[in-house]
Length: 561
Ligand code: GLY
View 1 (cartoon, rainbow, N blue to C red):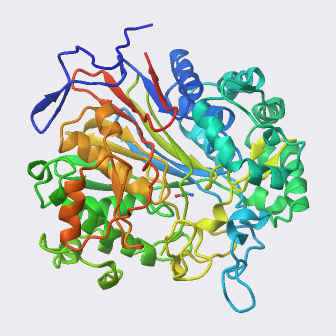
View 2: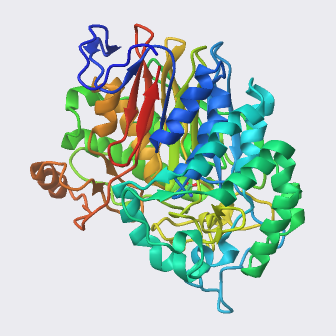
View 3: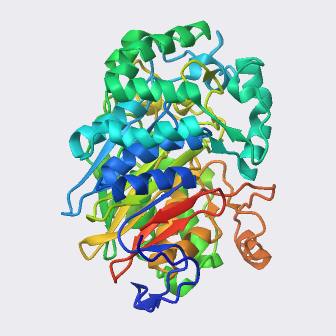
């Protein structure tokens, strides 16, 4: 194994951003790296690459290993998005987002009076969308993989059989969700056990499912014995997903959303994720301002970013949905003239109120509990992938026979235009429910190029805060000359148009900054607020080594060689 240097490296060649040499402070690896929510998953991705596999093989292994080691968000019963950049500069993206079942209807979460029935889109089996993860990983493997699928799945199956240790943070998450999990699954389900730190959880049922998938391929999940067991289970729980829904599911290659910010080229996810378009709008609106001069997390820089976020999220809520169902004016939303005009009423003297901002003359939904991983392989290929069950443990329905949780992604649709979802985000007609439609997402797997070369792979969980977490991480490296790990560690803030509040991570910002912002009319979320995002990123350093940024907010880990 090659030299790996952790924290406060004495490397003299760091990352050169804005003409400052920055020393890496995260894990540095010579050739390849995976940064994910669990060390076990990062290690599996790395082992695959050590065997000669590429980043796409590692993506398949890491994604499925997260379903074992991080059932909070890693999944077989959910979906996601993946953006890649090959060593030759070719870019692409895959949409393996869940879909609404064929029997879904626009008003399925409303009562006779047209009001949203509380909890129906999150806590019932109707909340479950048709899962896309297995179709996603097989699609990636078919197009871009190099090792046999059996070889990739072998260590994942071994992990499920061997079991995974419970961390302190995982114990706390189990506690948070245990009542609901018990209610949904009864006392005999695997996750109805109260797990404690250092317990070991084995997943024999998941190992058996993965073995069948390894032997029979993608169709095992969508047409085979697994599909039959799954549909029987779902229908017993009151879901409307049928064998036909599973058989019809396809992951979809989409053109990634690409834009420039100064001398960076940013490649991110296009709709049905709102991630790329919002990121583009915000970056373009802040580009004319000298953020570096204003200072990191200074009140002026916060003002500029918040005002751009407010405007981008207003657009998102009105215009965005599944592009296979609605026309989205992407070009118009990203045009320089439009975005210049959008910021024209911003003044440093006074906050713009969200009530004074509508979608531009040209709503939204979703959750906090998702997971992201970034991969760079020894050949120079990069993968940035974000996957989710929506809420933590999704709908909480755990199919014991198959060994995985099912999503509650239907809540990411707008159940009723203008009605806020569980995260206070409001949706619109473009994101209304229809059979086979994909619900809008905020997942923002992103790859950044500088001078035509790979610069960063980055992404985060965090529902609506994903976009702002990715934005701030890129700015932290590029404008503020932080190392990759420092950029991930740095305190974050968030604004999403509605509610009209700036949320700051707890105990991380100067109260003087709050006073300045308040004096200008900004409304600050004074309640105890959770951490914002959980970024896992890789920075390509000028000396061709890689620096990982693994978020300390979780159990996340960079592994490399
Ligand atoms: N369910 C989280 C997202 O798709 O953004």
